[in-house]
Image (tube, rainbow, N blue to C red; front, side, top):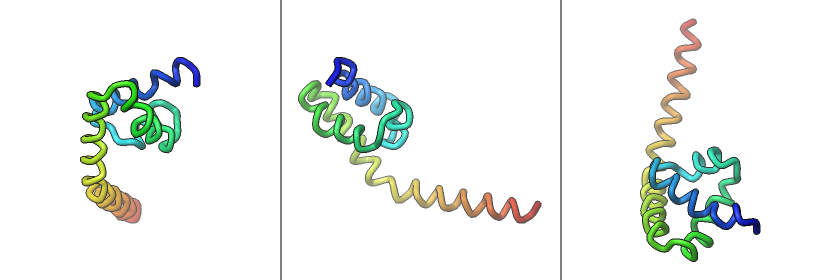
Length: 88
């Protein structure tokens, strides 16, 4: 693992906490897979910064609890867009 890979978990954690980001948005922002984000946050980050890990863990739990709401909002937007296209 390169030096940048060793610091990536801390950078990911700081980004997620400061922006309230989801795993998906963090993966897109850093250009890595969601699996890599999870591995960095759940396995590597506790070894590097336990205080940051606690904050990230709380955010991940909150995102997990809210994901059904975001999914419903996405479905609503999808059907509203379809309805708007039909009117044209």
